[in-house]
Length: 359
Image (cartoon, rainbow, N blue to C red; front, side, top):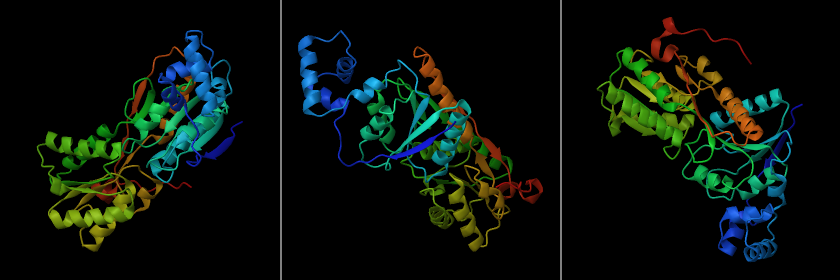
């Protein structure tokens, strides 16, 4: 039976990490790990120096020792951030669904955000509960994932990264943002649109940059302009979508389509277009990304990219289980394709399906 435990990761009272011990002794973290796990290939003097540093720093290596894969706990740890956003939240549902199917316990350590923080306490809290593996579902914002991945490099359980670029030594499952935006642009060009703007998400996010680059490259593929005037940046919110749409209309009054990086910003864009008397889709076609439930109920209903977020979470769990059962299994990289759902905001009422009733 699935149990679900939420553990907030505090940033106060920073504890010593394996890297702190390694730095104190001027050795690698791998050498410290060998001492913790009583590996014979460590010089006696080095071993003694590391053991002294562990005591001086009050480092607690027991969590790492207990986390070794000598036995199974049937528990999966999830390290996450950004639950206020659609992608991470829906991915978590997939993770817990698959753990429920597999009869696993889920332990969650939620990071405080994407700014400067120390993830070691959150990682340690998962290891202390003897998790069989860790799924890291943290949006790649700035160097956040890179810093966490460095902390995870010496963790003695399998790690799977979700929605992140490839990092050496880790398996990953992600969304193919490039092919998704290519589908969107191809759809709009097929409808005769030629001045296609882009309302991007915050470009500090890897996924926002990937979608923006895919928009630019696909316009070039069709021989269309993608200059800076056609690009505005939001922050995933409807308010920022409205602001971005105002800016685009002021700079490019003759635009006839806008590719929006998520649905909530698209709702803001639809509001502004209506306020300015621009008919959608007759004057301006609008597309979103995520295909949240509300997309089918907007006026007009929103053409959007449906991400396989539940599948994303489920696949991450299956991957970490496979590596837990076979530590020699090579790391893998899986990229999931999205589906373009066409509705009134691009194709008009004649090509849009009536919303299906669901809770």
